[in-house]
Image (cartoon, rainbow, N blue to C red; front, side, top):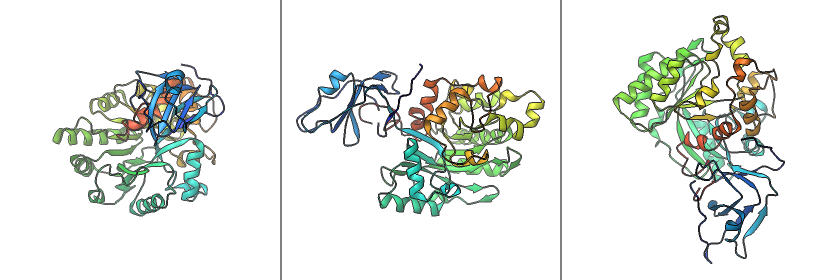
Length: 391
């Protein structure tokens, strides 16, 4: 599908499975109806519509103008989209908007404003230690956390281990409609996979400990060696305590062999990627030996991942990715990330090479990374990520 983006794209942050409008009663008319739009629902049963009716933060109906407008009552506000595109709220599945916003001069309030102004309605904060969790809870209690946050609790940073502190929390606990615990975070390697932080036995124990009590485990993995470590740990945890819906995640997924891609599917894992990751930087600065061996096809395999038999989700890694390539904000909008996925142009601005162009996504595929599949990445596909009744 080819989209012509028009000014004033509308995002609906609360959006799940509708296919017919609800009948209105005198006591529950919609608060607002958006109509005369190109409504991209991200629902297979009704991929396109014209209008959406909303009440109390929930979708009442999605459908044709005529049927949805028939639900309006006296107090209903009617918004004419004028042919603009309406989408589910965008989800940034791996970022550090609030926790590391100070790197680009943002305090917490400015970071929230920056995420919202770029078009994000949900973010996964991928390094929320105890101090940062308390700060998020205070921000939320004060009504200042206006973006929805899934917090991931780190278990290490480089070689420093933080212990099993996640055991003091309930997996996926929701503090409010705007703050919940997403999972635990492991760092497996850094410096483009040249340094490693776990031996296999220790990693196995951490993953099994979290998996056994229902935590989603997510791991920073750049190199093929780090993927081998992590996939082995997940496979052993699944063998000890089978859970077909564990949804353990790999963050970044830069260097991946064919056998590892197959294994991720067999384990029901999620690939969390950043379309703006400059493959040219990864190839030239990170993995020169792969270039020398002609194994560039292992790097940044976005299409291979999306067209595999497991979910892929999208993100920006704000602010670290733009800092890594020497640029400053503003960057990190969902439409920029979608553009990068479709064109393979990165923050570096260099024309993509043939091996990168071979891994381009379609617009449809890229939109799913940041909507319904992003919601799946945090077990929230029943409440957001698509435009359908009840979401």
